[in-house]
Image (cartoon, rainbow, N blue to C red; front, top):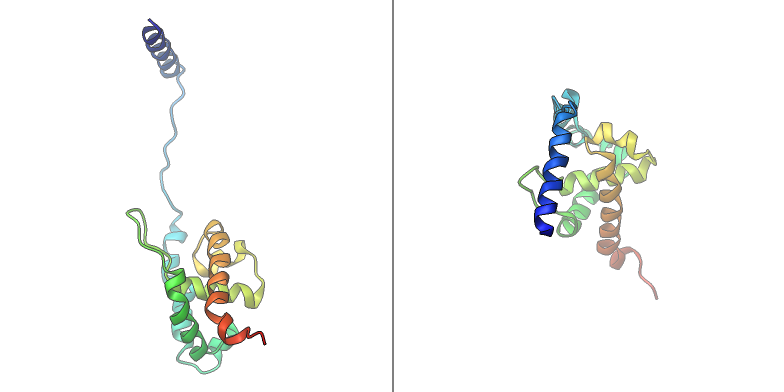
Length: 146
């Protein structure tokens, strides 16, 4: 008896909703056009170009290329994420470089999203995770307690 009443109430509710005349709005696009192009304009491409010019990598990240390669090699197992069915994971290179840029400049997440092509919501997770990984991999070398 109770299940019949529940079925009737559900049917009436759905019928009233469909009669109300409100149509559901569907997105015409999932992402803005300029956001789709950011992968070509990201800071990773800029870093690749900077590696060809001595000193520019240090100006951008406040770390020279050799030290950057050492840190990325040590930190990659801690900051690598797997691709999902929906999207590609943010690479360890992107994670480390945007974290170093954040630490070097103090720019806001909203400001970093334009150069990194990573959403501020993702940056709020990536930067603390990467800082923790940097600490873990470098504490033996740089934080020696006697």
